[in-house]
Amino acid sequence: MVRLTTFSISIAIVLSFLGDTTAAPAPAPEVDYVSLIKTGAGLPTVRELGLTNADLTKPLPRHSKPALNNRDSLEKRYTPKCWDGPRCNRTDILVCYNYFSSLEFHPCIAGRNAPACSMGGCGWWFNTDDGLPIAVDCHDVALSGAWVLNNCQGNLTSGSNAAQSDDRFIINIHT
Ligand SMILES: *[C@@H]1O[C@H](CO)[C@@H](O)[C@H](O)[C@H]1NC(C)=O
Ligand SMILES: *[C@@H]1O[C@H](CO)[C@@H](O)[C@H](O)[C@H]1NC(C)=O
Image 1 (cartoon, rainbow, N blue to C red):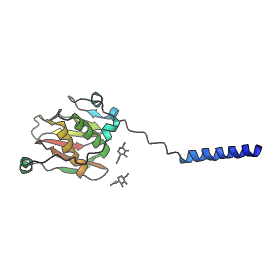
Image 2 (cartoon, protein in one colour):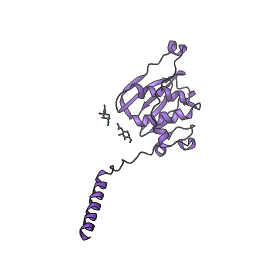
Image 3 (cartoon, protein in one colour):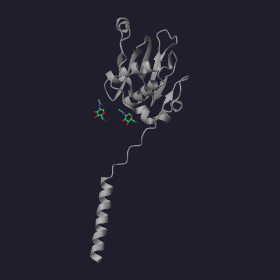
Image 4 (tube, rainbow, N blue to C red):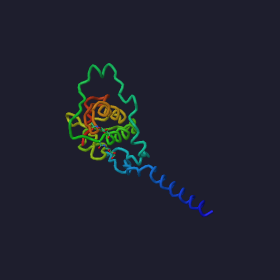
């Protein structure tokens, strides 16, 4: 009886030891994008939109390229670019992509001297050559800005593209 009890205790110790060593390491603290993202003046906040961290970090859709039409391809004046620096964390770029995508047909306005979305020091800046304000649908901004994630390499990256619907509207993504 005594031996059995000792045996049981030994088993219990072994099991608890195994339990400890096979437990997954504590996950790295997750970034609370909902709290940290900064959205521009005149745009709904992520809390107003009810977006969660899962919404903000979902991967780019497979077909995240704006549709081309003949007019666009003939008159395209802006050449998209990848830059060497200052560069953004790709997840931070993606979080703003998902934010703009969720705004759908809400107007995004270029010509403000501040990023329309920033996360972790990475901003989506909307500029025009002449500084005059131009508005395009935010989902178009999202898709056009996704060019940077689709085409610029590296874990840290930055770049620029024009909005597909109006190539005077320049999306610059950098820190
Ligand atoms: C990007 O990150 C991955 C995973 O951390 C790493 O394996 C890879 O070497 C990195 N690539 C560059 C270009 O730094
Ligand atoms: C980007 O940020 C995430 C969240 O903070 C982090 O896990 C990841 O390592 C970062 N990537 C790079 C390349 O710094």
